[in-house]
Amino acid sequence: MQSGFELTKVFITVMTYPSPSKKYQETVCIAGIIEGGKWVRLYPVDYRYLPQDKKFRKWQWIKVAI
Image (cartoon, rainbow, N blue to C red):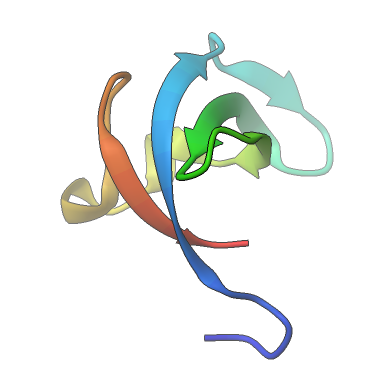
């Protein structure tokens, strides 16, 4: 894990439709709630090209470095 980041559990509540991006190829904006009730935004996420074992859906808990 990169320095300064902490592994955090996020309950995914929102995933946007993929949008083309010159800088990131294609991105998805994702929002969720961490334990404790604070909202977080995860962006940019190159969801289409994530390995199959790393993909997730709405209404699912994930662990992510934020």
